[in-house]
Length: 265
Image 1 (cartoon, rainbow, N blue to C red):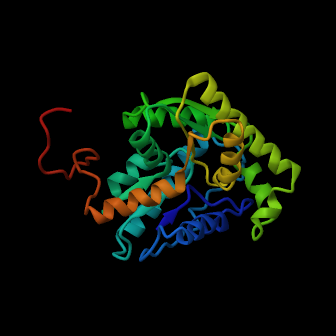
Image 2 (tube, rainbow, N blue to C red):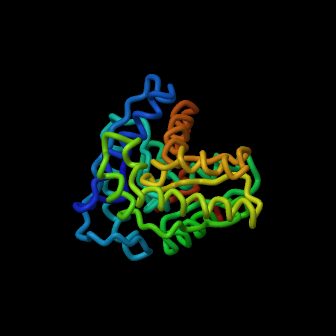
Image 3 (tube, one colour):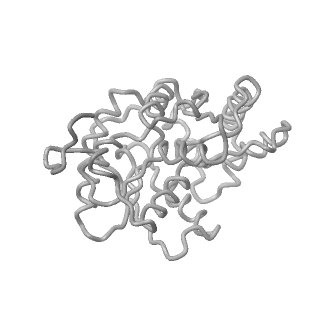
């Protein structure tokens, strides 16, 4: 089950998640895997900005969704989308099945292949939240920088929603190419100034531009730089946990019902 951070009546994003799933299936990454997508928990906010306040509102509804799906006995794992892992720690606590987050998964994948990575976020508040998340995960030494492209998630969705069924047509829009240019510029700055070896796009809307950003990064002479798409990384992490028969550990995400309580943390 794929769960977005919340439901925004002014932003249509489920088709973008379906597009990512379709592309993974076309690449042969989802053989034998069924993927359902929840519409997200409705919160009474249509703001296009993302900061700690809106993330706090999102987390309460998301946790309800996680508990609901983990208790159904239908799903093997849950994938939380969104670029900053909203509600991830409490979700890992309440779920009886594996739960993965996009930022968490992406950072682990980046740590497997390199030493210095950069997350490109939409706006500055989300960038700082992503930095704090990396510190919690113990991977802040691998995350050299978190940069923002200056375009909110809602702005990016508004652009790509003009052509939901024709990816090629999206890139005929000057506004879309401006977003791609700004993402690319931040990526090149991270490569040149911070010596990163890997770029991470965690926002699902931003990930629709991944191939175009990669082409421009290559053209700039940095073909050795890898770009990780957060959604695919999270799905692969969920698959791995299921195949390895692993679930988040009670001692890492404890509640008062834990039996073998450690003497100290």
